[in-house]
Length: 75
Image 1 (cartoon, rainbow, N blue to C red):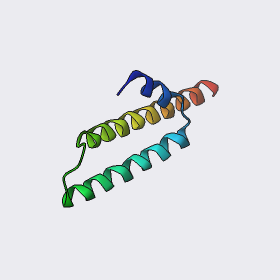
Image 2 (image 1 turned 45 degrees about the horizontal axis):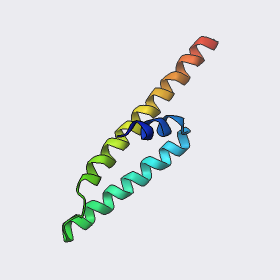
Image 3 (image 1 turned 60 degrees about the vertical axis):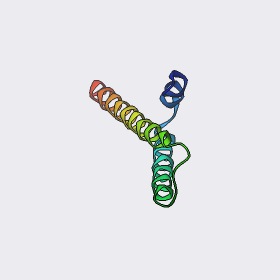
């Protein structure tokens, strides 16, 4: 994943990231479904999509932990 893509993901809000994950999961499902009937044009799309989902999940978890940490500090 390019550095530019990572930076744009870091700047997104949580709801935007969650919608991006659902879109990527739909895309993976469609590609897998098409792959059963005909060869896929670019099979690397599956790998990049899975890795992007992993990156987004990592960012979501980091944001969640940061919120929890700030909540502890406020108490």
